[in-house]
Length: 530
Image 1 (cartoon, rainbow, N blue to C red):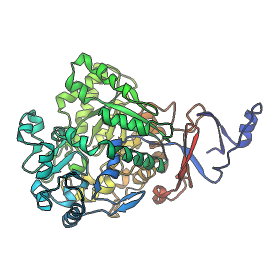
Image 2: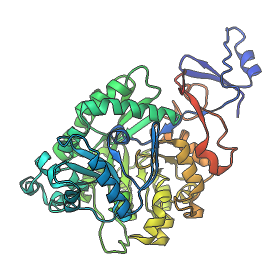
Image 3: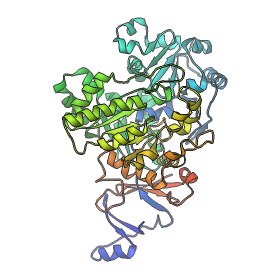
Image 4: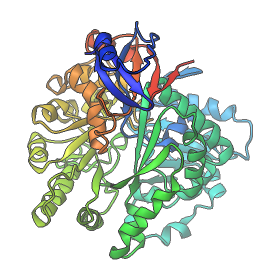
């Protein structure tokens, strides 16, 4: 800990006691800012993995989810059973004033709320278009009126490849993983149209700032030119209190262009960012298996009820994409949730390391839902790192212990303790709204692992407050190759600080998530919370 930090322009120039800093700059006029004398400055908090479009759902869609959501203007209490969910959904539909507008609701989870089909939604309304976005956003359920509204029919499905058709069920109005990709362009063009998206983006900016964020990264985010332009308009202006970094989604380039064109097509995306938004060069996001909140992960021991997981990229396509980007020297971030999905990712990493060795590749395992101890050891040997969502066990461990997974695997999900002990570099992320976009709450999740039911999930997988703080600061910066610029209070780095009322390393662990945030300093500019 240091007493004072000297800042010139947007950079840190010295740290130490106030007297030491005065002595170091005797030939210069110093202005002593005492606003923070009763506060605690920590390195600027980093939201390592967010999606602007996903976060705006908190301000666009009707929330009916499995956990409480505390928003600036309201708190939406959770729904934990089928009867309550259907009753509340029916009430939301009854209050929907314009039958020509689609009603979007987010947060449904079949393992809490029971199965939901097109017929169930038709019973609630056959005149208002209803789209239910599953808790993971990797699934959609439509009533008949919504299918008609968007022109979704069997002919559309029949034109798709078999791997996509297999992840659709028109009779039930259900589309998931690759099958959702068949309709998502049409649906999202309506959901995120400008009159909704622009004000929701401003809400998202305020939300992240209130969480103490000084940098937000979006790996594999929207490549929609229209949405990116709106994001530039709101998140790229001079008043934005953080920088927004994008990482390209590698799937479109691999799917639509010849191998020798993939890198050039990926790099064409970089020009779409403006102002305080920018793409991180030579970084790419790929996708392994299905969503954690859908139980569509690829699990080596399967599921208790006999259902199966899904691939977001077919393994042969994933292998091709990984090889192309690897050989071009890209850092690869990979969405993974099941341990069989992790096997596939590590097999590709291992094969490419042997074929074309790279010293500092920093391959990032993103989300890190389920894994095995042997895989953690393998990651350490291969030089991979983890960006984990520590909220998974908080919200899912109790229910998944009973349904689909079983207690032994469910209690050990997101095994951060093993990662830290193995020396694997770690960052934490929220992927809002997969968790609340508040780094201090992520710290609390990782340190305490207390479920919504009040149980301790996997006590050996807890980590220290110091390790958790590093994971939302310097660890997050390292995972983005930005550690020379941000992540610690070090001379030469950008002057990014989060200003807190208390020191998260000194309070009781269970109160870390409740520490009050005074505001932020971003690149030398002070942004108090209003």
